[in-house]
Image (cartoon, rainbow, N blue to C red; front, side, top):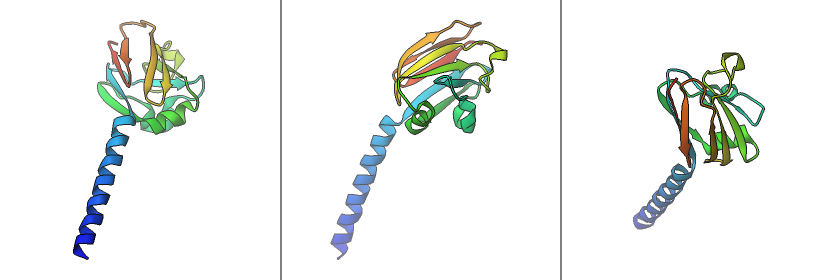
Length: 134
């Protein structure tokens, strides 16, 4: 009986490790905001990312990891267009979008169109975006 319980626990531990590793390897888009401004995005000409609370805003001088579940919810269809703003409210009164990012699927960036607004610079690829300047 003890041997059977040890085998069961070992199998559960291996399955948990494999499934957790798979989720961590696939489930994120990382944004690094190296400015003194928050950033937000209008997704597919619809909602502002701030409608998702703190998940939808990248704080100044910080990193933000977004799960592919959140991206899938916000985008709904792909490719997905995200107009990036240097504020926490997608406000055009504070300026035009500093960039437009097209997301090919839940965690892969297809294009980054840096609008060269002020001193902001946006670059990245794959599953990583970095905002500098401001």
